[in-house]
Length: 113
Length: 114
Picture 1: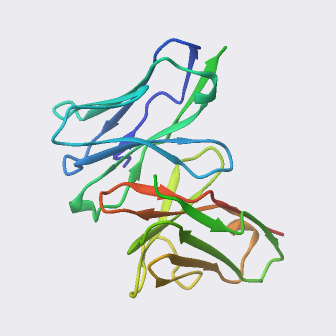
Picture 2: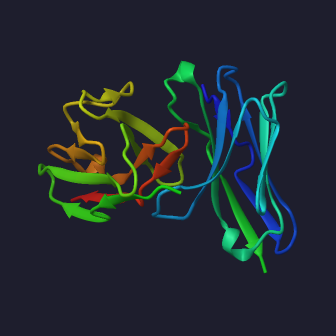
């Protein structure tokens, strides 16, 4: 049973526009959420995180929104740049889960110049 | 962010040999490190949690005698794939956790077993 799901396997967006990536989770014990960016044959790079006590966290072009009641989080990238083309993973953790990360399946983003 | 290195980045070995992969936290101490495996076009699969000074905790379905983990210091964890076979060919990634629950990942090691 997938506890963290990214229902869109891919996303294509024009340079300069907003990229919106979505992630849903089922385990209500998760209390910390992260987004990672990954290029092929490289390790994931940490982008931004959010604690369950917040509903929004912003860092430069990246903003993460958390809707606890809907068990949904999203990552907004604006403006999108060609270098943002990569696979994005959301992840969740919680003390009840031993603070281990549970990853979604990933969304491949292509930013067209 | 914190820097995690892995060595080697790529290794090719013959079936039946053992391969050791090192994971180092370069600018911080990590009491907990994690080892993941990624199959092509799939997400990361947690293999085990490596705790400094104690035995690793393996996820269900991961053979502890096959994948030996040693976390001898606060900056180094090693994964040894013993008696490797072609089905062990994969991309192995380690991570280290800082004081929050954020994990920082190494660049990964591509293992090919012939």
